[in-house]
Amino acid sequence: MQNNQFKKSELYSFITGKATTAIARRLQKNFKQQGVEITIEQWSVLYHLWKEDGLSQQALCDATFRDKPSITRLVDNLEKLKLVKRVPSKDDRRINLICLTPEALQLQETTMGIANQTLVEALEGVTNGQVEIAKEVLQIVYENLK
Amino acid sequence: MQNNQFKKSELYSFITGKATTAIARRLQKNFKQQGVEITIEQWSVLYHLWKEDGLSQQALCDATFRDKPSITRLVDNLEKLKLVKRVPSKDDRRINLICLTPEALQLQETTMGIANQTLVEALEGVTNGQVEIAKEVLQIVYENLK
DNA sequence: TTTATATAGTTGTTTAAACAACTGTATGCA
DNA sequence: TGCATACAGTTGTTTAAACAACTATATAAA
Image 1 (cartoon, rainbow over the protein chains, first blue to last red):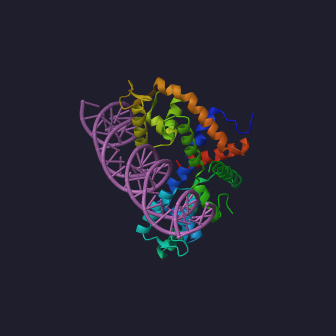
Image 2 (cartoon, rainbow over the protein chains, first blue to last red; image 1 turned 45 degrees about the vertical axis):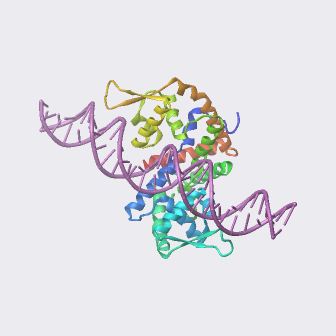
Image 3 (spheres, each protein chain N blue to C red; image 1 turned 90 degrees about the horizontal axis):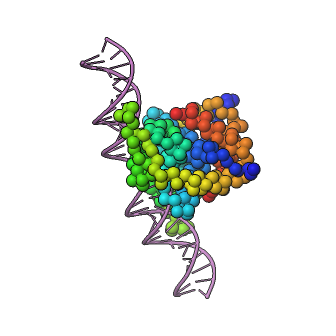
């Protein structure tokens, strides 16, 4: 019996696992309750820009595991909200650098706090060791399939 | 330091973890390659009906972690594909029992094989023990948030 | 230099998720 | 019986994902 052989009865929960979706949904709800009017998709883009401002759209695609049309539209919406600005790259005229506005910088602390709190709610009763293993598995799965 | 305290740098991968999405996407691709013309969302409904035919829409909501409108529309589409039929319950006139057609029964073996193969691809290099822990964590997260 | 090819980003279309508001039926209690 | 409430399912709207097809710029090779 091979390592990755599965009982059929176990298939489903893994393939359509809704736990990460549930966390995202809860985070969205917590944002709303705290008066933060952005979607989690928008937040996930801002998250990477807070780590490194001025990423290209392609870099955001790689970081968020989204395709280019998705990022184009997320950046469109973030621009409408005046949270980012598209800045044409001087080196390569194909590239837009996505830059945070002061408003977006202000959002960082609040939303990170909410995200942290959301994870505490989500992971109640789970040990750090278990979380580490779960994260490793998800990472390997993602690498295997990308 | 509490059990569920997190370093901020670790937040993101967990909240917007795309691994389960990646599995779903790969399964969709594998279906298409094998000429199976259903979406993974439709398949996830059929999956539960193969385990127990004649579930109500509400039971399908609970099983698939979807809300009622989502199930209404998935059942609409499955009915158009002639894979299920809504059968009014005799005991309770509010309830539709969702019943598989012979065509849907034929799909079971093929699609289960494809799903199994997809998981083998996804979980290469992951041990059974790790998978078990990952599943437990995801289950607890889901329970915590529902 | 010219041409082929790769890369960055946009637009269009279909499908589904999330949420709110709604209809119809059943249940429990005065 | 009659009424309030809960439950099952539907419809409408907004937002995003997935995929294909497209434009514009850069790079590499003839």
